[in-house]
Length: 131
Image 1 (cartoon, helix red, strand yellow):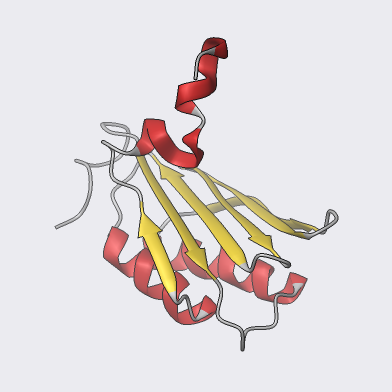
Image 2 (cartoon, rainbow, N blue to C red):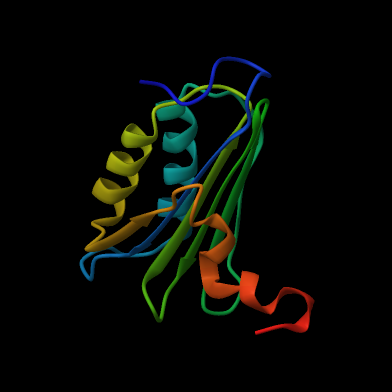
């Protein structure tokens, strides 16, 4: 069953963290293609991008979609991937998980549940200076 209720009635955020398989070459072309494939599998609409940047240690790909955004952060040394699809339209999260897992040959994967979001990256405990 699709997440949400339709255009503009619910904002859906899909977050996936994973470890990229050793056999996958992490390149700007891979990041660009994955960004476009994510837009396609979710049935969303490209507004601008994808843009791929290569800061030290990894790749960032970002695509503005008419419904919000898709972003990827791929880190070379740790071989980790962080995927964010945010939309004001329905999409199937299982299809996103399957696409990312297949493309990046993920051997570890975590899809974040709404109950976990505040703990993502362990940042919530540090907000406001408390531990």
